[in-house]
Image: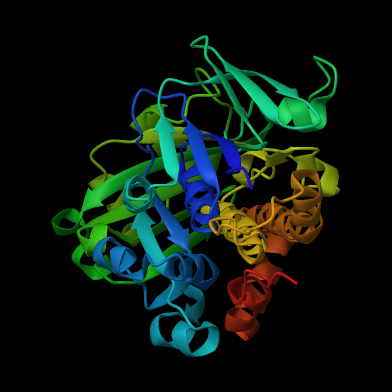
Amino acid sequence: MTEQQLLIAGGGIGGLGMALACAQAGVRVHVLEQAPAFSEVGAGIQLGPNAVRVLHDWGLGDDLQAVAAFPDRIRVRDAQDGHTLGELLLGDHAVRKYGHRYATIHRADAHQLLHKAVWAHTGVSLHLNERVRSVHETDSGVSVHTEAGHDHTANALIGCDGLWSVVRKHVTGGPAGMETPPRFSGHLAYRGLIDWADVPATLRTSSVSAWLGTRLHAVHYPVCSGRKYNLVVVVHGQPMGNPQSWTHEANRADLLAALGPVHTDLAGMVDAVPEWKLWPLNDRPPMTGPYEHAQGRVLLAGDAAHPMRPYLAQGAAMALEDAWTLGRMLQPLHLAKKHSRAPDWPALFQRFANHRWQRNARVQAGAIRNGQMFHSDGMVRMARNMAMAMMGERLMDQPWLYSGPPNVA
């Protein structure tokens, strides 16, 4: 069998995860990254037991242990008066229930551990300064033309090129101009990192702390093995500058004006941030069918297929689950072996799409609902707080989610 060649557009967490999973199944992978270097911006991300399970399956458990923090609980508090609304135990409790811990990690550290694994794999080639310009599919393969003027051909293509995906237009857009652009959520996320020594003493815990207020919420947790804290404050507002920019300088005064009076613990965390970055939250509506994942020899994964608001803390996890799933589907073909058979890429991608789209859509919809509840006011807020007081752990736990990824039939 001729060696199978796969192109992956995008070298972020989802793209590198996909490259590793497919290379481990014996496919020759070429990653096309538009940036001049493989790096990741942003601050912290949360990885539920479902995402941690994926990294362990890929042999990256020790690497994760070296750079992540592992919270003992999620504690939800009222942003105005500070009282506790509910708690969800993590740590050993999560291990007993789901087999793996809940991790919090700096995005750059997560990217680096995947990059290290991909770089060490002989089945992956990494190409920088290669932004996809156009995609052409034939009966036998896919060709990609980049803005650098280069042409790349392979048996199939996977678009892991994020929210503003170019590859997506080939799958869901049809004729030029038919693709619907991402939508702005009406929310702005202010992000900052705080050194451990600068965190208020009463808040130096290993917990994930969430604060719910009127038209706002905030989340903070340790990253970098506990040496730093990540703080995100989400408020209502309008984007400034280029909406496709991942970060830009934010005005502290604007944040404080949107935040208003809050509990002294939360105010102390906000005051401790040395530099704020602003992230306008964009997404797409929840997926409505497998056609949003795949078309012929082209597959979309991660944010290219199902960008989501961060209110279930599952954006990176779903991208990793996508990669794990395709890797599991490829494994039975034994592509690295002499007598393996070549996959029927369109059929394989369709099978993947049928398997993944509903779970991804459920997470997208759940994240939207969470955002509405987090920012609620009046009677809805009162009902939310009463429900949290009576059923906090049952409301916060997500067995259907944390026990994933679903097995591949």
